[in-house]
Length: 207
Ligand code: GAR
Image 1 (tube, rainbow, N blue to C red):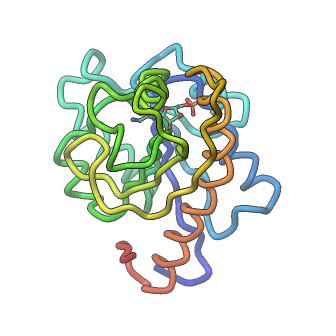
Image 2 (cartoon, rainbow, N blue to C red):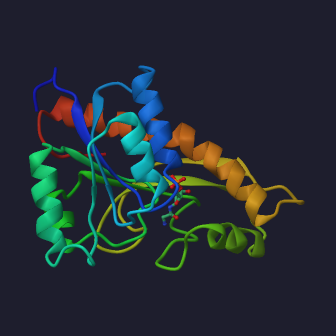
């Protein structure tokens, strides 16, 4: 990659899109440098993430197994069309097709609202994660950014950030605290990977 060219991000999201909004805002405010938001992809046509994209004038696509017979090809085509260098999963609740994971190996990030390798896996999303942390009587939780492999919530950890678990926490209050951690952590992790990609002058990252 050219050192003067920003890394082009595609954010994949299924739900509210608050991490997308935060990433967009950090780029807009000049706090998250060396990257630009090239594309938003959602499997959910009613997602808040697509609304965020429309409001911010970011190109977006609704891609799902319902709308596309060959989802992998549709994803790879649109990623090529928008010259995406780095895929950022932000509350994307589906496994990416293997072809996409292979084509973007080392260039796909995910954020998970707990300290992996604990409290991850296919069933671990939303309030369930925080209920599990509380049930395990953990005193510390947080968020994890990791590289994506073909299994849920696996792959090398890029960065983690912790927060306390309070005695009077509910799953909701813990989720609110962890979300604040995510808004701080994800831009930092994206910046770290982007700089690494630019310095290596390649389309891959090493940690
Ligand atoms: C985030 O908390 C993210 O960590 C979680 O989904 C939420 C999406 O929120 N992801 C997972 O649980 C993945 N296993 P958002 O749509 O408001 O950004």
